[in-house]
Image (cartoon, rainbow, N blue to C red):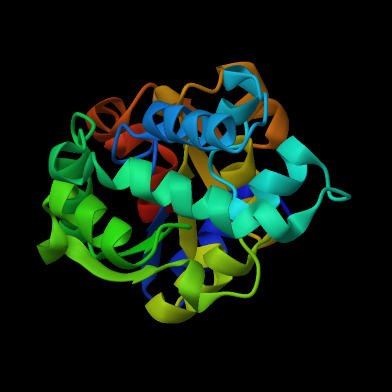
Length: 237
């Protein structure tokens, strides 16, 4: 079955369409803030970790991130301190998190076109609240899936599957928007096409190699091309 056949089948479905969004690096310009805060947390605990390696793990949950950067055979006794340090450092930015151009307008435009908007993020609690305040589009957001709601974080498909459950939408009626290879992999494993953005600092070639079905610079660029994007094509199919 081709991608066009998938979209045609989706158009005949009685189920609503869902647009599932990652948040960090996709709607809010925070990936490099996370990299700096993780670097400082590692430094405080005596670990030397290259900033570029940290950047390429942003988008994973903290447990997976630590496994990748410090090794699964590390002494896990320091994990809680590292995570707590990162959270404390990152919280200093809560009142000035920079929303990406077009983020709120994109969510509202899709909601106006009858897409159910669900966030799927590893952020939780006060961090997720700060991100939603920065975006400023709660009127368009149906629900948000956080790390508290799933057993495994991205690149596992659990956050995407939970978002689909929240939206009451099957995979063939949904699209995921993210900015990392972990987002693309999670969407693919959940059976959902992923539209990728370059705003998280990951290159086009890496995102396409991971399986992204389209790549845009940022939310504003996707919004400007919405009719010809995978969202528009699914609507017309």
